[in-house]
Image (cartoon, rainbow, N blue to C red; front, side):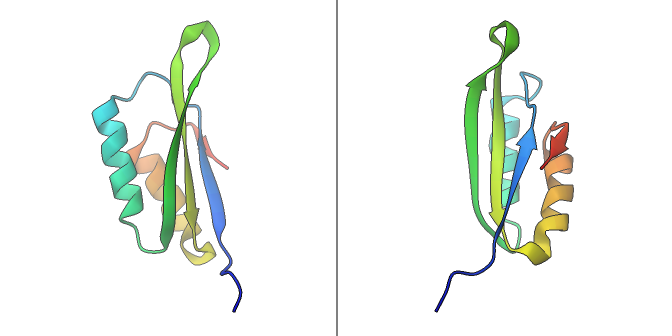
Length: 81
């Protein structure tokens, strides 16, 4: 018995343009998607002391396109890698 194949998606460049309430809602929506195993959020300090965050989603490969699309829908991300 081995580990299943999983894909990690990471959103890029969230600055202070999304409220904490909106971020919490986005994390819950991503967690609720079929095939998503884990969703994490990491806070950071950017240029000019701007607080930002990134979101990492661990999911099955067959739902990666759907999850990527939802990342753009529920967050203010500029990209997903």
